[in-house]
Amino acid sequence: MLARLDALQIIAEQQPPRFGEDGLACFNHLYREITAEVWERIQSNDFRSREFITKLDVEFAKRYFDAVVPRTDGRPVPESWQVLLERRSDPDINRIQFAVAGVNAHVDFDLAFALLTTCRDLCRPFGEDERADYNLINQVFASHMRALRQHFEDWWMRVFDRGLLAIIADEGGELAVIIARDAAWNRAKRLSTLFGREFDEESAEIDHQAAIVGRAMLDIPVPGGAGPRSSD
Image (cartoon, rainbow, N blue to C red; front, side):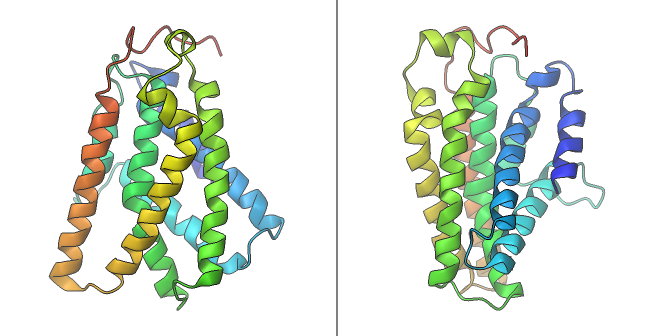
């Protein structure tokens, strides 16, 4: 999985006109760091159920790859991911906005379905042990959201160290991720009770709502636009 994320990072950073500041590359970098830490914790037996958390991590990544890797089967890209992919080259969007928009699509849309698939395939309940392991990943996300601003910080973020993006990417980002993950847990439980048309309609609505939030994140006015290209 990490090798595939590394390969995707190389490809995304070759995408003109922004190259290393490509929108997908910005999120993929963050996601790769989070995934690496989750796998380290799995190897260290930090979770109650290694089987559950490994399966969840794999299903989560599968949905990401399925959304962002070009499709050959004619299926449409989820609306929540289209938001990022269609604007990944926009010169007026800051790198941190791209990263946060990717977190939004992956957590607000993908996570509930990855959790549902995991519980069904393993015949596991939405129980205490599963929730404890699920919550432990909140800590991983929170720590990397704190580091997010440091990695993507541009000149304007150092000058204008306030506003919605600063909140999302720093202390408030921890809370925002935890709230989003709580919502994904509840969505998965609800989805487990739905079938057929009701399931499809609910799935489409979750995707649509995530897309609305993603567009709002990318449309936040940024002083100076994307800012100068970083030297690293």
